[in-house]
Structures are given as C-alpha cells and as structure tokens.
Length: 585
Image (cartoon, rainbow, N blue to C red; front, side, top):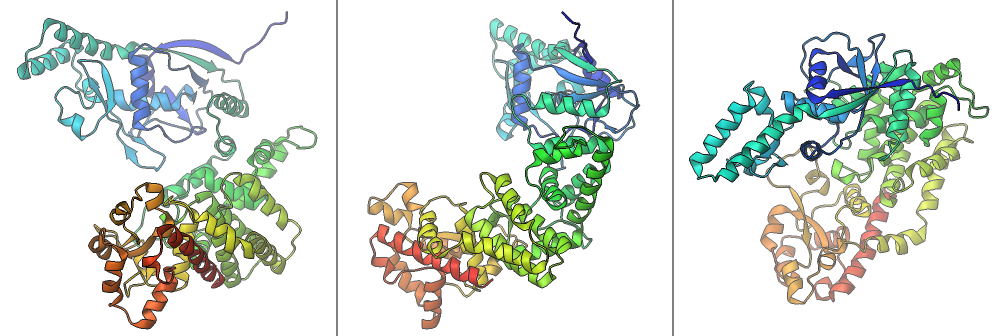
C-alpha cells in the first residue's frame, strides 16, 4: 500500500484563541473570499448550535509565506501585522463569531456596515435576533456582545442579572440556578473547540484556489461566477476590486459626480462578471471560461501559464468596457427608451445585464451607430422582459443568442439578427393567444404586467380618471409618504365578496387592476363599479374617456359584465395595448 501525502495538517483551537489570533492579525482573510453574506438569523443559529454542543464544521487555513493580498475581518482601521494564516474556508462563521464576541461591525453584500445583534434569554437558553420587542423585554439580554465588552468576570455579570431579575419578581431556587447555569454556558462558548486543516505555505496559490472551489462545491453549490472571482483574486486582484467598487457605487447616489448609480439595477460583482465574459469570450456558460482562465487547453486538457495570462488579458479588456460609465449610462437610456422607469419594473437583473452585454457587443465590436443601437436594444429589452427570456436556463438561452451572432460581420447584420429573434419570439399568435393566457394570473410581479406599464409609458397614457401621465407618476426620483400611483381593483374585493368571489387568486387577477392616483384608490374603496364609474367619468371629456378606455383596456359595458367574462375580455385588450406600445419602438 503506497503512502498518501497530504498538503495539510490538523490543528485544534478553542474559539477564544481563534479570536485572539484574528484580533492581533495573525489570522487574516485572503481576497479569494466572498463578502459577508450571512443573515442575522443564520448567525443566531450558529450560536444556538454551539451552545447546544453541536459540531459546526471544520476550518481551512493556508500558511502564508508571502503576506500578499490579505485583508482583515470587520471594519476596524487599525493596522495589523502580516497574518501567518489565511482563512480559505470558514470566513462566514469566523466573521460572525468575531463580530458578535468582539462587538465589531462588518461590511455586508451591499457594502454597508452592519452590526450583528444576537439576543439571549437566560431563563431558557434561547437565542434570537434582537428586535424592538426583545429590547424592551427585561427577560432578554438584547445584545450578547455587551457581555464581553464590559470586561467583567462572568460571576459578576451573572450576579447582576440575577439581582435585576429578582427585583422584578420572586425567583425560585431552581429558576435562579437555571439562569446562572445558562449564562455560564454562554460564557463557556469561548472554549468551544474548532478543528482547522492548515494548508502548507509551499502549496501554490492556484492550487489553494482549486481547493477552495472543491470544498465549496460540496453541499450548497457555488456558481461558476464565484469560481472565476476566486481566480481573479489570485491572478488579477485589481480587477475584482474594480468590480466591487463599481457595484458599491451603483448603490449610493452622489451629488453631481459621475457614478454608476441608477434607478434600474444594483448589480453584484458576479453578475457584472457575466457581462464581461459574454463581451470578451462570447460565452454565457461560465464553466468553459473558468477553464480558460486557468490556462487550460479545452482540446488537449493541458494547462499553460502563458495561455492563462492571455485569457486574463481578454477579460481585462472586456471589463474595462463593462465598467465604462459613459457606456453604462448609454445602455440605461435604452432601458428608459423601452418604457421602463424604475427598479421594481425590472423582473430579472440578469436579463438586464445580458442585454447590456449585447449592447456592448453591438457598440464596440460591430460599431452600430448609437441612436440605432439604442432603438434595437430597447426593442430587445422589452421583448426579453415580456417573455422572461432569461429566466430558467438563462445561460443556455444567452449561449444560443451569442451563437447566432458569431456569423455576423457588420452593424447591419447585428441589428438584423436581433430583430429576427424578436420577430420569431413574438409572432401574431403570441399577442392573441399566448400573452392573454400569461395574463391569467394573480401574481403582482409577473413580467407581462410590467411590460404593460412600460407600454402605457410609451403610449403617453394617463392614469385612470386622471390628467397625470403614467410616466410622470412612475418617476423613481419622486419620493413621498404615499405612493403617487397605486393598483386599483376595478371590481373591488368587498364588492366581489358580496357576489361570493372571495379567493385572492380570483380577486387579485391582473386583469382586475388598473393604475390610479392613490387618493382615488382610497376614495373608491369597495364601491361597486356601476356606482363609482359615473362619478369619476364625469371628470373627463368624451375623447378623454375613449382614450382612457383604450389605455386601461376597459371592455365596452364592463361594469355590467359577469366577472369572468370581464377578466377574459380585458386580458385580450391589455395584450393589444402591450403590442401597440411595443410597436412604438
């Protein structure tokens, strides 16, 4: 039997030692790690498992021989020495424990500082996420971080808590003993044992990256974008940092300075990476690109540093285009041109960003004239949103779209291919059969609904019973205590209940909603349509009434129609309005 050589050794720690090593900077984070993404509820569950004595998994460290590409946990700006061990697996757990036991804030996936407050109830040993009710309840310790922050001995803290509890109500000896016992167990979490597997410093960075990918492929599978971000941190750290900086800035409005901030999408680094990959490699399936960026020849299976460097140059060039602010905002003008006005009308961030990749290909590779490109991309984005083109197997669909473009050679053929796909996706039967069927839903976030709103914008429609334009009331820059525009039940729920129609899936059908000003929605309440319609119609002239009926897809004599007939008729009319809005493009 041959000897098996391992590239790691097993080392045992207790939690207190781990936190001390992090505190002094001896254990640090390599940039191959992802942002802190755990919810407070998951942190609570971690503490509960440890409190019960359950195992919470091993850690994986890498002995650091060079001290490069590292960062610390938390947001404390004080300097640290070069860490001798880097966390490869276990970042989320150790960040959670460090943040709570040391009372430090962390940066979350939205690049905001967040303090994790975990509450503990000593009488029954229960953990929970602190909320307003818990903070008011004297039975709870609302933030266990304060226990360690005081620097007091556990005996003193237990005694103080018991004195406060006894001042409110009499405690039996058994209850007092249980509270003391549970608090002692909480303090003893500092002795909780962890096992770490430490990878030798002689193991090269790429192999460590491979190990990270492999261990994180077990259980909850990471997507290929995570794997590529891992490689970027090893081989092109500046590129990953640029992605993160762009995404951070896209979430924060600025006072007049150039910024990626917008009212449509707040992209994540892995999503923007997909845009770069589509632009640079004309690929949507990231598994191929991951292999290419590792320097693998897809035919021979051999790896080459030269090939890896060449592929990273392709990624660099593509990402520089993706993160160009002028190009980014030019693309967002196409989304605006398509009639979309705010983020809640965007049902697929990935669909929007895949459209951005095609915009970049059209502009940078084929040189499509800006006005023409904006028009075709507006049509494309409207179609992809309406049909949920990039839902489900998004990678496969985008791969097919990119493949259709490989035979194109100039701007005309690029536009022609996109228009051909649009025409094939939206034939006559789609508008008259498929779309009305898709509108038979009570889901308030279905894509055809937002395509209908976009069509109303394109048709310069006004809100029902109002002289205000839909486009103006959908303006995301206007903020008020009440929404300026609301969905109104044309047949109110209270009225439908009198006709024995009570199920939400029936009363909340999309075809039963119309956009109105919030004040009108409030005033109408549960009135029958036959009662409120004459009152509100009196506001409008005859031509305005006709326009209103068209824009809001109101069948002739709709107030007297049986409810199911009304819904069926209105679905056909809504589909026609969506088609008319699309044809404006």
